[in-house]
Amino acid sequence: MAARFLTTAIAWLRHAAAHVRPLPLVALLLVAASVIAQVVLLPGRDAAIEQAERELVWAEKALRRAAMAAEAEGRQPDGAPASPLERFQSEAQRNATLGRLLDIASEEGLQIPTGDYRLVAAKGGPLERYVLTLPVRGQYLSIRRYVAAVRAEFADLAVDDVTLRRESVATNEVEAQLRFIVFARRGVAS
Picture (cartoon, one colour):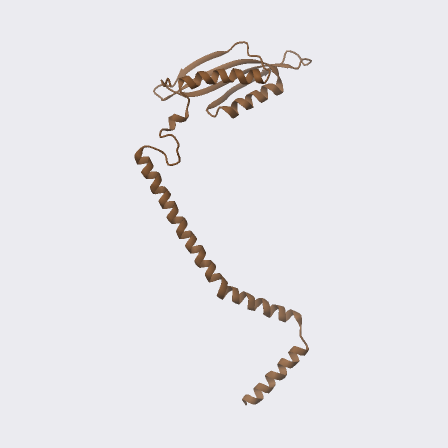
């Protein structure tokens, strides 16, 4: 019986080898490759992924512990100021800001003949607002560049209002009313 089975199997293999059909052969190779990938390759990858996830969790915990320790000491871990208010300007810096605003205007070729400057203190709050109203005269694009340069240089400055007016359609010069607000720490002179 075994000899008969073996003879039939050999005859079948000879026939299959003589009449090879590529599609079933490709399918067989793909199935074999996927079985090898599932059995040999993927378990190693899964283990590596699990190990990386464990290391990430450990690193996050260590970072949180360091941040909590730094907070307990009164400082921030990445060198940031201990108080959120320290990012706002002091009185001396606020006065320098006004001078720099005028310098930027002259760099853009704008004229600022006068200005209105008001200090508005918040009731009971740690910040005060320095409201600057500047009448500006110049080309429209120069005014746009000026506002963009001011915003880029001063992170704690808000553009509150921009009003544009032109005397006539024929003129290239525009009159603008710009209102900036500079936020500063209250009562800090240095």
